[in-house]
Image (cartoon, rainbow, N blue to C red; front, side, top):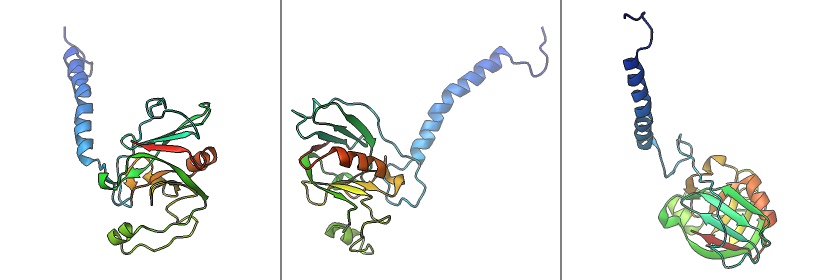
Length: 199
């Protein structure tokens, strides 16, 4: 029996379905070649901005929740917080260091809290970027955003950022960055002595 022109055939349907099944693999291979994982210049278009939102339990990482606990997962670009009584759990997307040599892992704690922090680049940052200013006061140009939690390691902080493009990316010089609204919330929940683990 002859079909009218434009009527779908079984063969056409199967060929179309096969092309749809194959298209994600093609798109994935194309996108992976065009995606930049490590971001060095945020003024250029970057196609990847990822963070893994997976709830985690504190017990594999901390013996106790005394003073509360912050876990930063570098690979998934996420920060987890548990309150001392265990009643509050928060999960935030974060920015993480650009490269492994800028990344520090291990245990530390919050040693200082500053609302409206000022910023001075480290000697290593100035060596890499001599054009940078030696000091930036609090305000919209400050790389530390609105709040900063200073860690027990020199130069390492969990802080906000006014440049929201950085969140979910490898974009920092060693610190962990959060959206300003998230660091303000975390700042209010943490205290000097809150334990911190970077993995």
